[in-house]
Length: 371
Image (tube, rainbow, N blue to C red; front, side, top):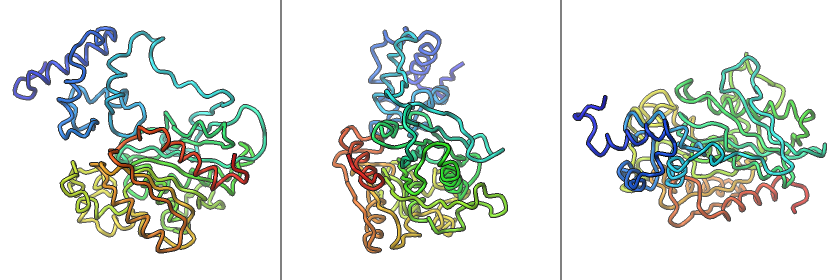
């Protein structure tokens, strides 16, 4: 039962509407308050909902609504969920023609339940192809390998992998990057089986995933992040990657609050912030750990090409996080392109050209012949 001292009348009505929509999907279509529900929860008015912005009883639906698994509910995702009707009308995840998928492949034998990846492969052809690995966001505490945006690359000459990794509720850093590196080593160890060109591996991720792909790019020679030397799967393979596409990922955790200023909507230094939970302690009290987790810490002249994309209205990860990484890469004479998108917040970009540019980046850096 809803307690009036916990929920306002408007919040109570919203929760009841959500519960009714789960029980009888068609009922939600009759509401006249769809936009006001979203806006009433969007306390910071950034056009998206975090898990913390939802009333308690509504949070159980968060992962169902967050279809792209980036850790936030967009207005479009909210609208799609509320307007879902019969099973036939629900959004599907059909693969593009000519693409097949092998799901839930363990990349660590007898490992954690999150040590799994999906492989998207061409239905025809046995030639070795470069692979692009998608790493999801979600503040290192949410998200999954589902709904991989890189799948269309299969029809452009690639194999695509989408991976899960242990979340901060399972293990603290460096578990997350060690898992990503284990997945890269697994791909190399199984390259012949799946038609992968082991010498051409690219990585792409957004938000927390952007942080992890950037860290993969700069820490290719950092033994300390590879995992336990005594229990390291495919230890005879290396985890270095050949191309990195980083969408709005953190790069220096200690500077996040300072850079965000008035634009920021969360306290990154708080003990329960995503960054503090990642490190296992308050961010500013864990400076050595924070430095160890920063992609900018490991920049060297032999790092692979980078494409970095960030919105200038990002209220969760300020665009200067991308700027300082790009500056460090340029100073080391690395190949880097930084794109700051005017008016864009923290989430998938609305302009499809940005995704197309990311596709083209991988074609130029990983394919021997660019279409």
